[in-house]
Length: 296
Length: 188
Image (tube, rainbow over all chains, first blue to last red; front, side, top):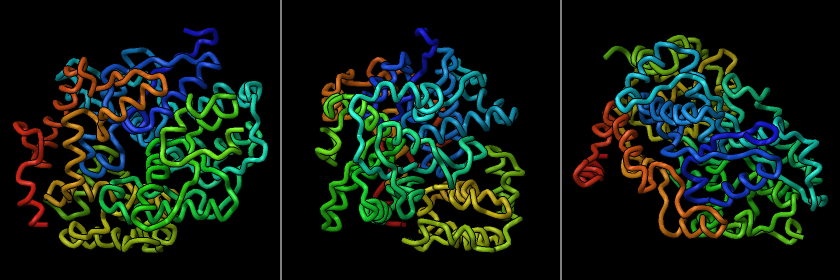
């Protein structure tokens, strides 16, 4: 345990460790600055993706998610995630298993085949909630070394961080505030833009079902942010990051556009304001490039 | 097999609880779901129509509708429905029933192949291992794909076998790939 008694199991999922390790590195670095220790979840799998496996077979989705939860329970730690897909999947599974004893019983019969059990003793946290509520805005502010005063930010929430609100518990899904607070703490300005709460287009198997069509959502999202004068987009989801960042290369190829709009995970943005270099945060190993304004 | 409504309540009910699924009956076709649907701007998806098709027992029509797969599960309609219809979970359940009857595209079935092979829907490759090292991380995370964790991967496979997911996507354990892909593709 650390000085302030905060230690978490980091549920990595797929996109963060396997496509955008900068998100993993940035989150571990920022958390460590505040004495928050990360433990690896040995043997964790895909969450599995709630809109994808939830769409194909909910009866497979639930025990796979329960197995991941059981790993954290065995570590006697709460979980944190850096992807709304992982959040959506694990938090929803935890909610269903905690509120439906007969479903829990059925799932545990499957987990018993390899000696595991879901007990309901962990909690699934999103990393941005740890930033906002556990570390808190005051402590964050103390560590800001390079205020991003003249940066206009388009906040993108993704879907499964806020919705369904009965499971997520972050208040109204139409008037969120957590990311906006985190942006302001760095000195930057969060700018309202058309359809700010719109989905990136990737979820629910839509990206796989029809990639160009899913990119059309992304195109609309980015154009709306650019039209509102935003310098970059900040979000809490590795899967959105893939669609918004790599999607720019895919759009430029498919539609003949020339997008190069900076996309940052929340801890990468805060990491820049705390004085980390873009190399330390893995912002130099993705599709969109960071402008001088963010790096000065 | 009952009516589509009965199947939705029974199958989805085992995960979400039956009351959750029975909200489908409360749909008054007001269209608020469709008005706010980001997919509906770009695709033929009309959530109101899907709800009505489900209630009218139009099983084959709904299972064969390409737009059934254009919902990103963003939950906007779910949040806004004035009658409390659990739209997104109803759509996911209809997709489950469609998949069980063979209405699943090859790319969607391939996601299952990746998980059965590695435990990840998006596995790591050599290039990404180098990226991890560049930001000071171990070349591979200690997840199911790590060579030290084969027993952990086996647990995930056990779950998929116990629910017959491998059978649903026609997975061949000998080749660790889809069986008869060309044939299935031609049928679609």
